[in-house]
Length: 113
Length: 113
Image 1 (cartoon, helix red, strand yellow):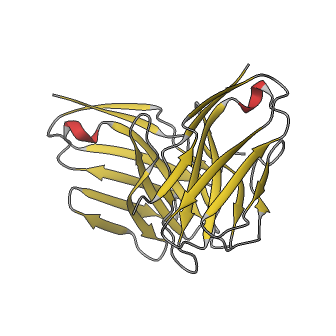
Image 2: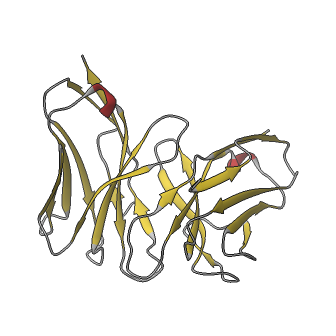
Image 3: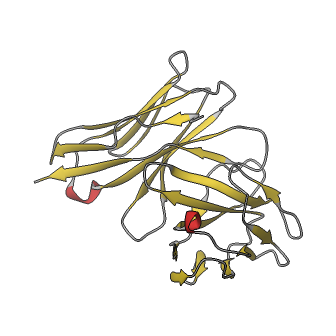
C-alpha cells in the first residue's frame, strides 16, 4: 500500500516557466513533509520541507504548499532553470520516532531551453 | 566533512554469494538508515538505527542484516544474494531528536546475476 504517491512519473517544462510537482498521501498521522532532488548517479539532496501546522513554505524559487484536508502537497519552482532537471521525491515523516521517511515514487522533471 | 560515504560504488554478485555494504558518516549523527531504490518504487526503508549498538527493521528487511558497532558506521549485509536484490542502495543519516532532514550518501549499485 503506497502511503505517499506521486502520480506523474515525468514532467516537461519550458525554461523560465513554472514547474508544479504534485504529491498525495493517505496517512493522516504524517506531520512533516520534505522534497528531495536527485541527479543521476548521486544520492538525494534535501530541497525544502513543511510542517503539518503550516500551509506554505517558501525558499527562493521553491515553494511547497500543503492542503491537509485533501492530503495533498505540491512543489512550485519559479522560474524553472535547466539545472532543475532531476528526479524529485516527495517524502513524509510519521512522527513516530526515528525520523523515518516514507517516499513517493518520484517525478522526473525536464526543463527545456 | 565528507558527509555520508558508501563503499563500494558498484558490485556484481552471483546468486547465493554474500557481501557487506559499508556506510560511514563523519557528522556525529545518531540515526542512520539503509534504503533501496527500484524503478517506479521510490526509496524503501530496509533497516535503521537510532544509536550505536541498536538496529530495527524497516519496510523491506527480508534478506538483509545490519550492524552498528560504531556510531559512525552502519553495515548492510546480504548473506545469500538473490536477483530480486538487484537495486541501488542508499545510506542516510540524521542528527536525531526532532531533526527531520536526512542526509544521503551517493549510493551503491548492486547487480545479482
